[in-house]
Length: 260
Image (tube, rainbow, N blue to C red):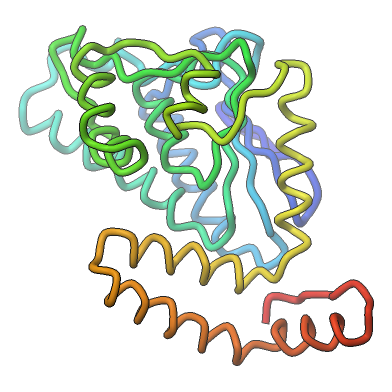
């Protein structure tokens, strides 16, 4: 399934969503963001989907950022609306009921880096680079970069990357905790598919509740986070997948999870 800016491929359980503006290094213009939001809304309601991989078309860029040509003449009010619209798209991505993997095949700058930060996992080609260079334009990140990067790697490291706009190579991104791992560029999609297959074999609701427990509890006092975990543990225990998982373990066979 494809449109002017996006291509969706893969099986029912594991889909690959590719940003397809390689002539513009897959920059996110308003039309691309609108198409992405609509596609994510549709995927959120797909009961067969277990994992979503996002990557960029062409050899150079994952997503090289927002489309800067759309910035000229922006008023303060218009810029605020623009940022909120972009944030809404990435919030939709982050809140999908399934894990997401950013397969970063090239430059992931500005809005591209912010989109990757909204994914559950980030795999980087060893030739890829990421960064938030908005201060070189007299701006700050506007699609969630100041918030998600600081939560991912801490205040001091995030401030250094955002204030300088410095680009980070794949191996440093792994050391900082931005990326899960760096892999040879030719193996990137295979590695993403392998991770997706592993995730897709697990109970979908258990994955969802585990993500929710971390997201809801991480910034709370430990006692509150433990309460979140216990509540979600209880919800998981009431699922048919939990009953199937226990039976499969006792019967020494592979579990067949349905997401119910």
